[in-house]
Figure 1 (cartoon, one colour):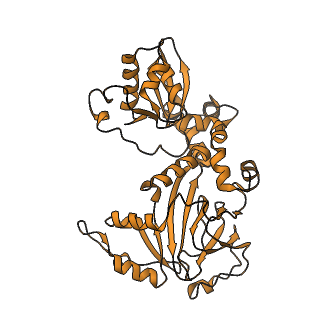
Figure 2 (cartoon, helix red, strand yellow; figure 1 turned 60 degrees about the vertical axis):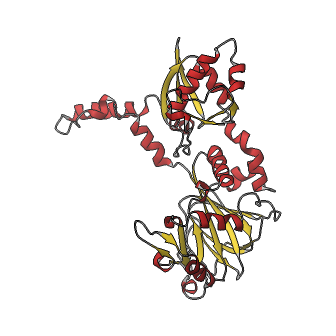
Length: 396
């Protein structure tokens, strides 16, 4: 896929020394991977200082914080004030709990920190699955989360300190977990017992049981989850394509003759298959954009004005999500983007082609590139239409 080709450079850096092709053919969706890396590999992503800053600036957002110790969530009342107007984190009580062995998790931290947002967007563009990043910090030798498995693909980025990870495969029927309840003693039988150090990466496939134990020192890591579309998502899409067809709105012929019911069954089977291409996965991705929506972007104040754009041409334009041209007509064309199909004037195709790599482009450059095809006024009108449909973002 083109998306993968464009993304190989940054993904290669994250997975090194494992090559991207090897990862996709040998490990992705199949088995765990551990990659030892230089200590500074993830230094630009997140740090203790940035964690402190987020805690200080988002102390009213208590829903983002979670403290856990030995597999049990601590009562939020032990470190936060609750209520519609007084919700806030109490720094001293939170720190006291951490000192006693609790693990701090910060949910969806990619929503608040630009380097992590960019990382999440790159994963979404490459793997075509919904992505979220959490941060975890621990201090003592007590595990936070219990032995568990996730319903998504997991990448671990060890930012600072060390942490011991134990992986047990896809079944724990014969694993004795009693030691975790009192002393964070990992069960025997792990298929991988690995200490992650600063700069290390680990991939854990969906459904693989695992537990992580701090080592009586400060440790900070990120967990990036990729929630892939599954077979049921594809089946729902096939059914949704039929929602407005005759076979979908007709009553079932419950009291009809056997031959009539057989004719109806054949109509249903034919309707299900009609319009489906040999490569169902590609068609699903093209028509739906996968199982995630583009992250929200805003172009205020201009998008809320009648003109929709700033004056002049000294601003940047970026397409919010990848688009696919689905049909061309004499004076119009159809654009499939983010699961929507929109019809635009024919000249819009030239603008979309300028923006389809999702790299921000100067408006002046777009105008120059289309000189001879569209005048400046037409370019502004068409870009404004994209802004109104929330398909592009404007920055100055």
